[in-house]
Amino acid sequence: MRGEASIAHVDLDAMFAAVEQRDKVSLRGRPVIVGGVAGRGVVSTASYEARRFGARSAMPMAEARRRCPAGTAFLAPRFAAYRKTSDVVMAVLHGFSPLVEQVSIDEAYVDLAAAGDHDLSVDGVTAVAGRITAAIAAATGGVTASIGVGTSKLVAKIGSDLHKPAGITVTAAGRERELLAPLPVTRLPGVGPATAERLRRAGVGTVGDLARVPLPELLDWFGHAHGTGLHRLARADDDRPVVSEREAKSVSAEETFDVDLTDRARLEAELDLLAARVGGRLRAGGLSARTVTIKVRHHDFTTITRSTTRDQPTDDPRLVTQLARRLLTGVDTSAGIRLLGVGATTLADFVQDDLFAAAPGSAAPDRPAATAAEEPPTDQAPDQAPAAPAAAPPAGWRPGQDVRHDVHGPGWVWGSGRGLVTVRFEGPATPPGPVRTFADDDPALCPGDPPEWAPGG
DNA sequence: TCTGGGGTCCTAGGACCC
DNA sequence: TCTGGGGTCCTAGGACCC
Picture 1 (cartoon, rainbow, N blue to C red):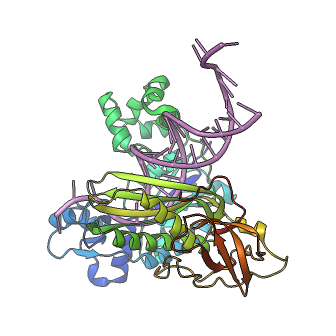
Picture 2: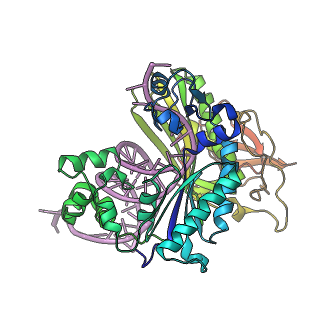
Picture 3: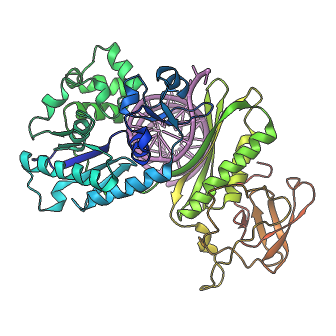
């Protein structure tokens, strides 16, 4: 917690709906709902007009339709437009401080102390906040923001939510706990339905109540991290710094189907699409992953995950697809699947295959679109990036060399040349025959026979 | 027409290592 | 000559956020 209120939290008001109303005059003053408009969609954003009828974020779209009157606009999101507006806002914020932490598409912290030239008195930061909201409205064509300014991220964020829309809330140093005490615990970041219910059963309703709970109780109820976190937040004890950039830790894609799927071939095709999307995004972002996870939501909403971790990171959509497929093999899908997802974690910002690169200085050649006949299809991904030159391939296989292929198992090089390598496999894991040809930069093809691999696994 | 999609962080148990 | 004990990695699940 700082000695003066110098952290601002900027939150755009009902941003998706606001952008739609800005871009289409006929929507202004009317209830607007943005979200999944078909099938099993939920509300992303409800305009303030729609909130008067009870529509809320995360509400099933079907319920929002029941609540809102005729004349309400139900719109599918236009993320490109929101991203563009977001970029404009972030540029505005960078005009007020070099230290801006973008939290999401519609939210950011601004460190006013880092600018060096702002008056950090209460009157001073109130004036700065006013100039920020005016600049955002001017630059975006009328999208409004609410701003909280305080001595910590916590107080800034709580403040920005207190007088929405278009409100400015400055909390002076020393007044933090009196701001928090009367608020329901659910206003604290990290207190969701489960935590709120546990607290309610203990008679804890407000942040002031929570601040009186001894730490050992909280540790007992919530474990170490969450327990100490709640204890500190309730006391306005928050020294998290504003940080400009954070590295991505995972990349994922998932899809909820309009009707539950049971057809195995259809599920595999959907999984291939998702996996190729993830691989394409990894490659486009210059990332590679060691762990691939699939997520399966059954008809009854029970959800499981299955994951596998390799020694070497990969960014190859074909390999991500193969690993995801293999994970799905062990899942019973006969009762109906509501959602499938594919994720990539344990990210590295390089591809380990670099270590096996051929002659130094040789540029990575374009990866062949397909190798031999048995490669699974990966060509349908709509946002798959064009092949990025992410890594030099492990080319240069010599006849007789021991190799391993992630799908076909251990083998040895039969012959190579012209960008292709033919491998003779030894076990039964290679239906229908023992010889296969691959691109010689196929990342599923690795030297040797690492011990973690087991034939048929 | 109950319950999206993209993430982050934490916990707990088992394997494995020294 | 029954049961150690930390540290790290992996897997699965869950809470939470926007």
